[in-house]
Image 1 (cartoon, rainbow, N blue to C red):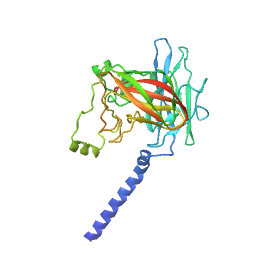
Image 2: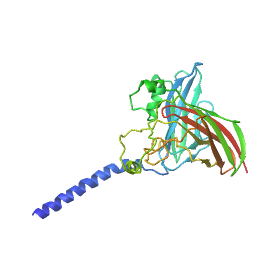
Image 3: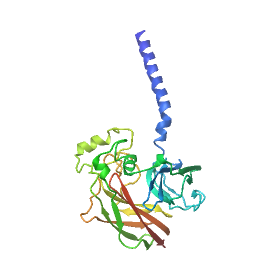
Image 4: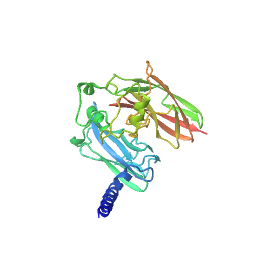
Length: 310
């Protein structure tokens, strides 16, 4: 009798576990897509300019962890009304990319909407840019949304933080051949805020424990530290950067080369702020490369165009 009861209890437990896994499976799958899923354009908010105009801020969510997309400006990547090309990317990195670019609209924009449409992997999606007051963005909102600050929190330090600046040295348009490396030299400057949360050294035992430690909280968490990252923004093929660049997309995996990854250590910044990176192109065409300076809380962007020949 006791043996039968024990068997029944085991069977009941197995049934409960099985049902729980069935209920959790869609959510688990949603977090582990590698390819084949859509990319969703996102309106992040707006901020005013000194001349009375406004900047509408956009990003995107690529549901895939690995699949990247090249989508030229045109029927699958466009804005309405007006010019379909508003400076949006044509190369889409994995996962969540916040505050990727901004579109300036005039002071008399009023209550109109600027709509960004993407059609990737057979799914058409739209983001609606608007000047509604609820979408007003300031530096604290940016730092909170990207994970530098806890939600709803700030400090005198975070309120004093100014964005870093990146100044690209040399021409803004260059020419290079396929397979030849081009040197990108930039000067990175910052006010030293927010103070870095990155640990300068970690023991082997600490690193081993951290690799298997579950996330401390469900929301995104970013390590505050200054870095410069070069990335492909528009182009016809892959670009190889040397050294490998810190990810600007929210790769939360523990050992990712990403400030959202628990074991990330920021690259050393020279005293004069001068940083050199080489870029090598795999195909001919016209490319736009994007340099993002990031201090953990705020950012600055700069771009160059590279014409790649055979």
